[in-house]
Length: 378
Image 1 (tube, helix red, strand yellow):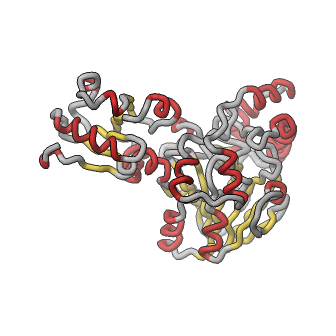
Image 2 (tube, rainbow, N blue to C red):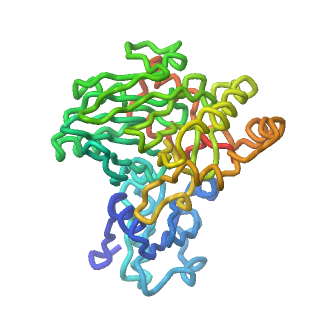
Image 3 (cartoon, rainbow, N blue to C red):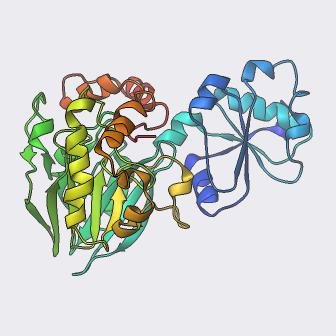
């Protein structure tokens, strides 16, 4: 690689902005095909091809006619090293606008993008932190200088930077349930910023740390905003949703935009399927259709709104979400016990980490979280 063809880099944040702005993005993914098939960069105007790194070491002949001459080419690998080399080769081949994606899919997986969802009745706002590379969604509620975080990811700096910038005093940190697909940062950021950490007690039987219980009907005052707990088991036995100012419904991993939560990640699919149906077909039915559903995950970019946020009115989901329209209880049981994707990577280790039983090093935590979330029934 000559100095003239030195590779440019693009950060996960910069790439996210391009995708959320619906720009045309072309990606050359040089990971192994199995890894690519399992998990890739997606978006409304994203075009991606896969050719493993080792297949390109002897030259680019197999892909050169597939590379665009008139737009940027973004090369990605697992950690950023292989993509930098291949991006240099692509540049040497005469393509002038070539970038390596910094930190590869590791960096893509860890980026959090804050998006304002809307305002609150008594002042303040609710923000959705979109973890675009993994499909995780977490929330910050701000009112009168006070704040609450819900379903916090392990990467704390984006939350801390946002809290500093908006001069918020964090008072409450809540998890809707004990997560099995990603490592919660809730307890750590609560301790760091002097907030109180809350967890449903039915999910906390094996935790090794102190916490405050979340029980059905509990209300939390955050500035001038009220967060009300609604017990909604089914994904886990302790799963709890939150209604914020009678405007927003944070459903955790119980209800998504295009699917419903899976009940099997603690090995309890047969036991919990009745709870899941009761939550979706009775408990949520008692709530107003006008609540804006804000889930803890999304599966594909098709679920995103134009601004990159993920939300739908509850009434609309009862019309459009197949998981909410299965009349037969037997068919529902079959759907949520037989039609399941593979278990999340390292899900048992992640559960044990979230219980406080193990404390993996940072690189091990990254490795445990690699891949898409798999919290939904297909």
